[in-house]
Structures are given as C-alpha cells and as structure tokens.
Image 1 (tube, rainbow, N blue to C red):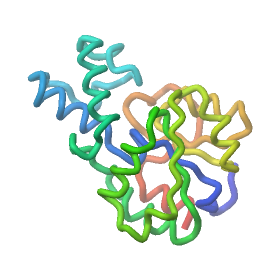
Image 2 (cartoon, one colour):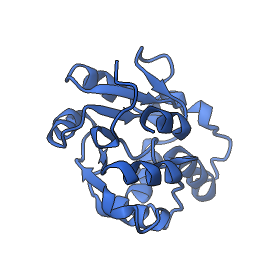
Image 3 (cartoon, rainbow, N blue to C red):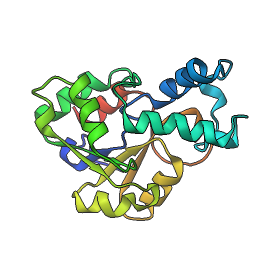
Length: 192
C-alpha cells in the first residue's frame, strides 16, 4: 500500500487516457472523418481498439496518428477535473508525465493550450515511444507511484517495484486486481 498521502513528486502520470480524453477524440474523429458514428466509449473493451471494434486497422492508425502528431488541432480534451487537480499538485511539487508517445512536443503544445502558464514549469514530460519500456523511465525519474489506463502496463510496473494505480477505463475492466481510481477527484484525494 501507499502512505496516507502521496507526494505529487513521487507520482507519475500517463498522458493519453489519464490526463487527456483520447477516447473521446478518437470516437469524434471516427465519426467526423469516416462516418463511423455508432461506436460508444464502453464498446472499447480492449486497449487495441481494432481487437474489439470492427474498424480497419489503417483507419485506427490514421486517427491515432492525427491525435499524436497534433493534439491541439484535433481538439484533444482534458479528462474531467484534470486541469484543476494538476494545478493543485504542481503547487506542491513537480509533476511527471511519462507517455508512450514517441514525441514530447505535441504533448507540450497541448499542455500549453489547456493549462495555466504558471503550472507549465512544474510539469516534466518524458516521451519514450513504447508502452513496455515505462518501468525504466519511471525509475529514472525517481517515481514510486504511477497512474496509467493500460492494465498491462500497470501489471508490468507492479513487477518492477513501482506502485501502479489503474485509471479506470472500459478497456481495463476485469483485467487486473490492482488499485483503481475512477476520476481526477480521487487522484486529488490520494495526494492532497
């Protein structure tokens, strides 16, 4: 278990699916660009979308490429409550984001677009380009706790002496027996 309150400087965050509502953006772009408008968030029961929804792999790849390369232009939104809680956490310590995205610039651009300017200097972004290499990067940042929406990543973290916390999403239900948070208000309660 973890102490009564977690120091935000020891807690890392995944970006897509935790800070940013990537599923909403994916579904909106699928509808707007490809007229695939009947998919609901709860239909995404696997992290690999093409495994649970009948969408051609190349369309999935193109939508994610758009989101990853220009999150601002494609209207990526923050998860409810993420902005205000990140503001509060950065008042206590630097917050670290470790993302499987290959480039940090689109994440920085997005953070500049949604967060108050006073918050930005207290957020560190590590773009590492691969889901399965997160433990190394998390250890390098000196983090002890990590919130991620990918159950497989959290299971891997638990085997690497990092305390994982799963951010509840339809694609991680019934895939683990780890600690779970359902909202940014619950994250706030863990730290403040």
